[in-house]
Length: 382
Image (cartoon, rainbow, N blue to C red; front, top):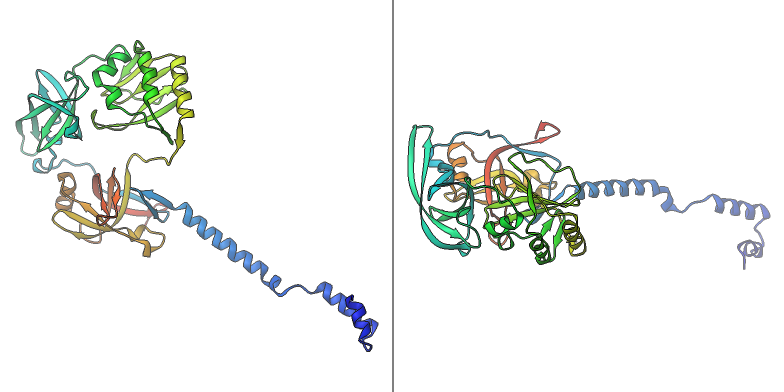
């Protein structure tokens, strides 16, 4: 039964009452609609809040952190350290072996990559503070798959460092370059921008087919090439390099800064096309990796072989702060705490290339530097 017929059946309800009821029914809105704009505002605020939260999410050393939109800068300036606070490679940047000059790259190399012992080298270092010249000798070993005329490993205080010869001519063909530095064994093409390469064996097959590619440019002036190209990121322990670049351009050129100076060879459009097509079809998209990680916080403890920092000051939500352990077992870290007057509650900036080991007291691995720092927002100190 329709509602107006129901009203009429009740007997004492007039036609006017029925029409009034109909009109009120048309004008009346559900109670919840009174609050719809308020609800919408709340939703927008929450969306903006969580959008802000998401936009400030960053991955540092393998950990997801939710940081505020503030800048972190180190406040230290370059300075000359006392001789006893220099690392051995800093003391002796150049060594002489079998009459040739080798420049230390400062990167350690694992013993599994080393060949036989070849003798000793002589190194000289100058202490600017005391004006004393120091001389020392170090063991030299071969690096597997490479030519000792171009590359050796020098043992200093229990660590072997890669040293590259500065006296040799640039190889005239890419094939010679491959043989001298054992590139198929010492270099992996596993990362190109945000692409992870599934297998680089085909890339080396292509290069091996174009060994006669001639060098077209060399020099220390390293400028980005003005062509369309694919950039591989190269880290090689055997060659002592970290995140250098290797370009393959569409018009048939390869270029790299793996060595002391830039090398560029012309492999041809056909070879370049094969490599570019292979990468496109045999790679997956990954997160872009920074050159180095930086993390900041307040210094909370200074112990004999480590310091603790708390990154709560950086966090969007302070309760998400973590206490991080920074080993100070190397001179280049220890000198900052011992000589620069870094104290408790100071803001410090840690630069590192490894990860944060949450299973080992949140230890930061691969620390490069620890410096006194400051936090700013829009140019204003926090």
